[in-house]
Image (cartoon, rainbow over all chains, first blue to last red; front, side, top):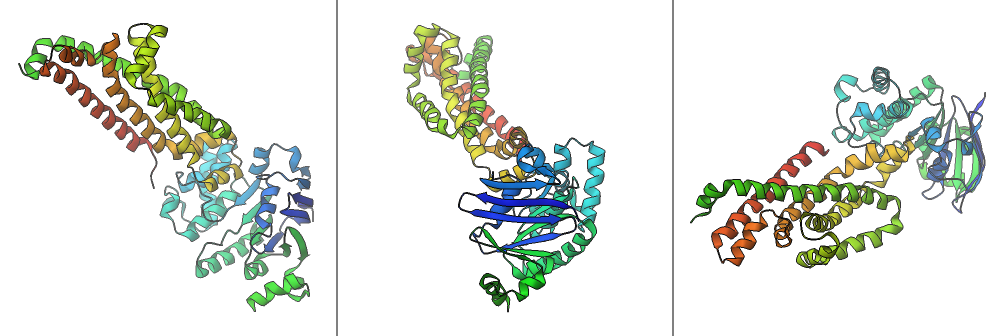
Length: 238
Length: 208
């Protein structure tokens, strides 16, 4: 398995310290941790919304720091919690955003948008012309996933994508996402503080505490770990 | 003699003064837009400049209009250009301030989403910040225009023409009809400008 994302000794001020991991195609690394543990910061260091103060990020063999930041971000799908959609753009415009920035022909964008909306279970004819505020939270989050996939990036970063949803919708989207994971074969980094969600969706779990990666292993290893930080999380769902 | 009888006899002059008035307002507000809009955008990129620039614009705003006209006469002489310059200075503050405030008020999460999708600074401005700030920016243009229509009447005092000519003539000759003859179309002009820009705002601005 070739590494799509390689993070080496990543650091950012006093918030992230010496984080290293590798994610291959078809793999989902779940970054688990409490609020303020550095999960979201780590994601933003990967797509350079924040500039690392130490370490290296390598994406498909290229050093992220050596690439132009905007070009780098267009190669990385990014799913954000809650307000990630542009409120003044229609659903179709939101999904077609990165292809548009990349200068695709309008017909090609339209076809891609239809394909992606169908992929995430939204009828393009019904939802394409609506605006984000006309959709439910679950539907908006589907659009967010479709948008991240638009330019077919090899790597997806997801920042608590299902965090703001009601428990039933969340479960529904988690199941659909699980099915997508298998079909898409992308490398994914998925941030959450919900340990159930992490164990369900992750092929591996990385546990962050105070900016350090204190555990990295499979969900099964996580369950059985004696590490106090892991036990705390497992006890919280027991 | 009623105002309408006065207009019936002097409609040629009325149209001429109205034209002058529109000219003063259009050139000064247009100029303020050309200078103020980019300046407002620049302030969002250079936060350190915000306080001094807005402060200076605020100070200009506090100078009484007649005094500002007086100060500018030695520079631009008697006539339209002195009035236009003064009006431009007054129009600058609402335009700069609202452009800055409008863009600064865009939800940081939306801005970060745009950057996260790979927008350049220019794309972020054009596709996200300006469309979302358009309502506030246009409101500033509206205020600037309406205020200009009013202040432009004083331009008559320094030979710039406009509807103020009737007002000053009426004051000098203690003729209420003449004062009204200038004030009435000036007020209607302000209302019309406000209405038209309000219409543009409803057409152009995105609302949920």
